[in-house]
Image 1 (cartoon, rainbow, N blue to C red):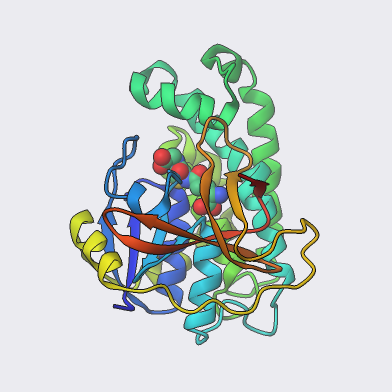
Image 2: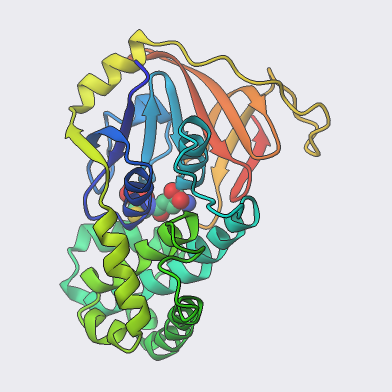
Length: 308
Ligand SMILES: N[C@@H](CCC(=O)N[C@@H](CS)C(=O)NCC(=O)O)C(=O)O
């Protein structure tokens, strides 16, 4: 019942970030392949409407966003740690860069490069999702030189970091910043037509990339969406820890709220009763006819919470 289930698809870069973390920790997990485009009928009963990829399930606990997923993996499986050498805490701040400006610049370059060759339904979904409701491919393409210059500078930071001669970002053992940076290198190399030549100017980055790739993804086996739903139905959410008594929002367990992902457009808010509200996370309790009671976890940073 407490097995790790990752709802993902192979091409998803944010899923690659989590797969690398599973590799660093040497974990065994089940992979449920979800559709790249909505509807995602076997995912919605678990998340209550959260559609982004990936999502992790452990029994009836559902973790939305790679931040929540990775934090829970570190909590449950401490060794090997993602913070070798005591780099806890601030390394999370790196995720605000990699999942913010760096991610957006990488997506923009891959999108503009693919242009009209991108399947129409994919473009119609992802364009507004990442670039807002007024998305126009021609405008994105006009901004390509600027994006490339910004992206190059950001990859340059990785190269500088690796110039210290250590094997990984924090020293000789891999950690959170490696996963956070690697997924965008993986994405650019695989999906930007000029990715390999673009990255070739960063030799230390390319050597590090090989080392991270060699870590692998742990051990996974396929599971069907239906089987994952059955597991959620048979399980109860784990007991919630105490909530913070003085949340700045004034919200307390039992309140009904909607949680909204920031930085993407047109996604649904997820409604539920607060089961736990803390410094780093909020957990909603939801009832669903297919899976019964589930606890849906979100990070605080990057999410807006409004009273329903
Ligand atoms: N902040 C989220 C971002 C997730 C994200 O944007 N994932 C992409 C795939 S790599 C996505 O959801 N695309 C739309 C989809 O899969 O429906 C996280 O860290 O998990």
